[in-house]
Structure formats: C-alpha cells, structure tokens
Image 1 (tube, helix red, strand yellow):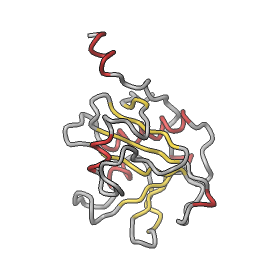
Image 2 (cartoon, one colour):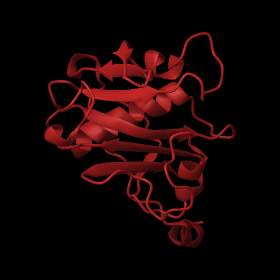
Image 3 (cartoon, rainbow, N blue to C red):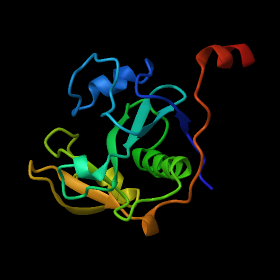
Image 4 (cartoon, helix red, strand yellow):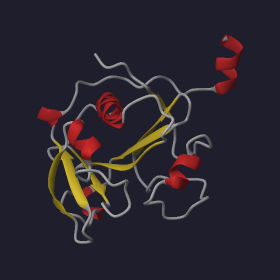
Length: 171
C-alpha cells in the first residue's frame, strides 16, 4: 500500500503555479494555466513542494511515436520536499490509475531533456527507479521513458484537494 503524498489539484492551482513556472519545459511563465489542453489530472503535495501532471491526450492529435499513452507532462520536486522523487513518481502513477481506471496499451510516457536537468549518472534516474524504462528518443532528442501496466503500482487514490484554511482551522 502506498503512503499517498499527493493531493488532487487543478491546472490553474495558484499554489502549484510557482513550481510549474520553474520547470524547464514551461512554455509561458506566469500563465494562469500550466497544463496542455485536454483531459488531465494534477497532483500537488501538501506543502506545495512538488507537482505532477498526467495528461490523457487524444491520440490523433499527438505528434510523437507514443500516441495513445498517458503523458506525464510536468513533474517538479523542490529540494526541500521530504519525499524522494522516485517515491513521488510511484505515488503519482498509482493516483493516476485510481483516477482513470483504464490504462492505455502504451501505458504512461514522459520526456526528459538531459541538457536541462540536474546532472546525474544517467538521465531520468528517478523515473528508472520508479519502474520506467528508457525506450528511445523524440525527434528533438528528448529521452523517452515508458511504464506499461505490468510495471505500474496498484491504484491508490490521491488525497482530497488541500485547503490551507481548513488545515489551519483543524490544527
């Protein structure tokens, strides 16, 4: 059973916006929405020190070779976050599975720009530790990591949306 660190959020959550603005693939810094058009699920940690987005794009509009897969289009973990990046990824995949019951045949993919991430032994290390496999490169040279259903964690619901005012009232 996963200890779920994620709370449901949304594509325009003001607490998540600063994290999205610091992510290397951010198209328009400061825009009130930080998720591509279409169906998505967004997760945010209680302290707003990590954010995750899974998009469920319509395959015919996708221009990469993994059309039909869920797309992790944003993952940002701040250094002060208490959770390991790989643990957050496992929990986010589990929460995505709980949100959308039918996993696509191509599972989930994410693209990593090795030139814009912190230098490690191997690009996408946290995804590898979370059960993703390096399956190729995009035409632009991004590393592609994929996780198929057989390698995914069991579904685990994210927590309800975190409301700071309610948390203060309960304390």
